[in-house]
Image 1 (spheres, rainbow, N blue to C red):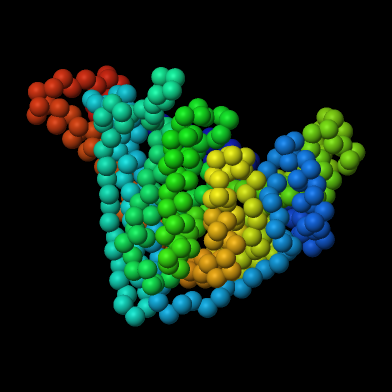
Image 2: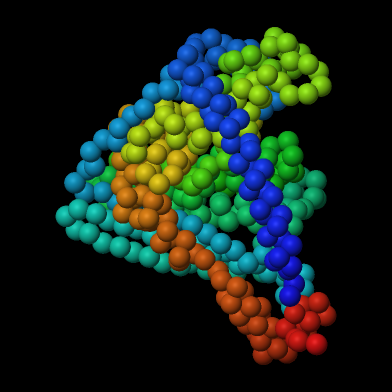
Length: 402
């Protein structure tokens, strides 16, 4: 047996006991957070955030309205459409016979109302050309292999481009929600960390360009765009409470009297909470939070007029985060359409947007698919009398020795 489950189970029991012991303190911190939201001064906070923006050492959301407000979903239009995409990939594998990768995009279009319809498709694409395996910078001759986090970012670019293509083919007179799985503010690349030419090609010229295309399409139709994040781990709103409460964490600031070593009082007050914890205490099923602005430095540097906003939604079974471009958030009609249609999608599915569920089913690449893919690559090379070079490690995984 590879894993000693008996020993592991004892450690899991110890972990559960530790979590239970921490729960009392967490309930107090949650009470503190809810109280702080009730007394939140938006004008004072935004002045403090703007004054110290370059030196804040934790995510702190842009607060656009009183954060304790809650909004009910508006009525749905009689006819509407939901377009959704999801993607998966087979990464480059140095143990495989050929250097290549595959991106599979699942697309779904669900039409409701007078003429209901459903279109579900899978779009696999193999990348094996030399110029497809790297991101190349002609200016200085540098290159970056398309694998790992870079391939994940490329998949996100392809998803968003596919979403724009879906919308382009839909009737312009039908209210439409274009939906992706995951955040619009993070695609696996970071300005200042990843090579600038990679950020430029995949983020600015790829992902942001696809968002701009969707924005262009929205000028001639009632179109909302959003990214849905299930069980979000973000703490940008909690960061805003920290900053508003004492300013600890701002470079050179010790206004709260925190010691130089040890936990700051605002950590003890609200530390360890996620935004979803706070809004679970504030929102009734079906309600959304106010809209906040993303604090991502990459968004500020690279997104241009496609700035990202977000709100939290009590979908009934979980608190989800919904990311949306600023041009959607700033339009009351499109904001309401986003809220209403995402909630409707969650209610039609098991607490998660059904269009995204179906897009995932179209996109998923199973373990068996991956094995068969490798076999097809080897077979194609053999059929063309090309050498089939693979590692002994890869070969050993297909054999039983003992």
